[in-house]
Length: 192
Image (cartoon, rainbow, N blue to C red; front, side, top):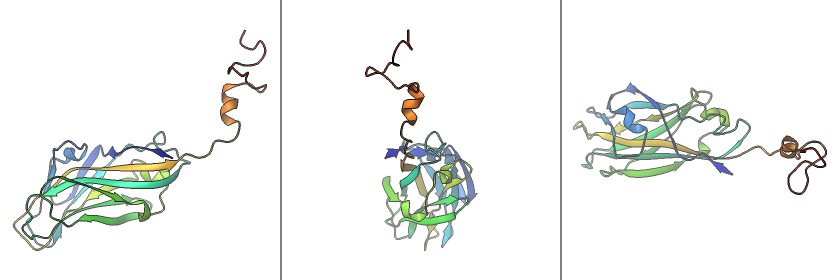
């Protein structure tokens, strides 16, 4: 099994609400993107795009084994405001996937890792730029005092199994049809 390692978006946009410093989503460094929601029972959306999952990162014929969504986030108050931190993945050919939520009203930066493997039948094409988005969707419940929702980063890690190599395929690329010698050289006088 192979792993991509956590990858961050390189592009973001405000889909709804009042957001600042969206570029702070792009690394786990303590700098935060912030969302202000002053109305009760309201959510906002920041859309993250371009995670760089090219076919050189995840081969087009690979089998996806596991997908992890990592969120580093917090709110500014835990005063019973029903301040929910949410993140959702969107795949153009599938639609909006399940919400992954922290309802604990955490006030220090906290890392939550969600296994989102079961959210859909993943394929390598789902991760390509222009196909995959992650949406930060904080929700303000019963307080109009605006607790502020802060996201340090959101990233994705993909574990996959490369397609099996056809027997002899690698050897054929290195050696001629007569095979290789025990030292890896071509047999006979082929190198002389």
